[in-house]
Amino acid sequence: MARPIDPEKRPAILKAARAVFLEKGYAETRMSEIAAHAGVAVGTLYLYFESKESIARAMAESFYKRIEEIVVPELEPALDARTSPDRFRQLVHQAFTIAVEERELLLLCPSGFAGYAPHPHSKDARESFLRQMGASLATLMATGRIRRYEDPVVLAELIVALSQPVIRTYITLGPGDRERYEAIFTEFIENALMQSVAPNSSQSHAHTEASLTQIKTPHTPISFSK
Image (tube, rainbow, N blue to C red; front, top):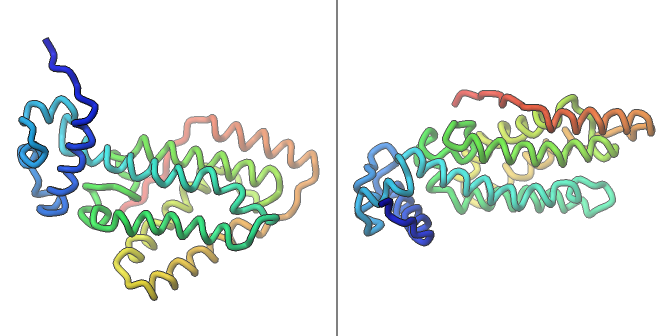
């Protein structure tokens, strides 16, 4: 008879894994060490995670979900010209703040904890985030609030890809330099998105339909080598 799954053990295991990863590094950590730190048998650990890679995936998914919860609901109002010009800057600052909070894990190992990298460990969470972000960008493009681009999901992917090296540098800097990086990155994205021309009604309708179709169509993410 299979042993029952205790829902409280999974977060405890992730917390233990985080501590061991930070102490020993992702590459040097063994499943037995995670189990010992979590106070469970190795066999019990494998009931929750089939490998060290699956633990890294869970951590990456948690990171992306946290980013998604902040960015997706706020993206449309933040890029609306009728709102405060500081709102988009505040949104970027929130996302960068989360990266700083996860600094140790993001710096552990590019292939171990793929918080921003297009890595298979974080593929599902990353694609979900890109599609949600792409849907918001499609709405903004269709209503003339940002510049038009052919594929909103690719646009979302490029923004995230551009963020990767900036954030990796950002989290290693002191507060003064972080402000400079954040300000320049925000201005760059604003200029890329917010120089729009208001569409006429027929163009707006056609673009809305095309954008929504692209969001629903299976999309193969671009691969960026580290």
